[in-house]
Image: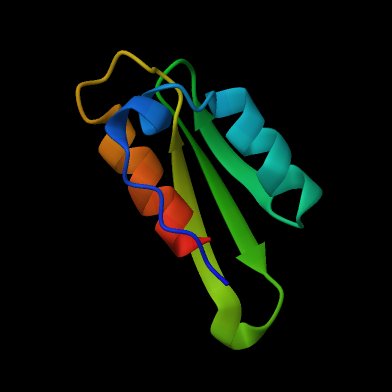
Length: 75
């Protein structure tokens, strides 16, 4: 079963380092990082499984909760 988190209050408090730790623990590789802005992660498990995820690093961005929601939906 896949949960869909859409509560803005919850999404606003999801820490970028926790997201990055999860990605690293589940086989994602960080490919690039723009300090204090975004980190870019990639997974090449299979040819058809080429995904890139952008993790916003600044929780003060106005669209931070929506970006985190998009990220969770990809996962």
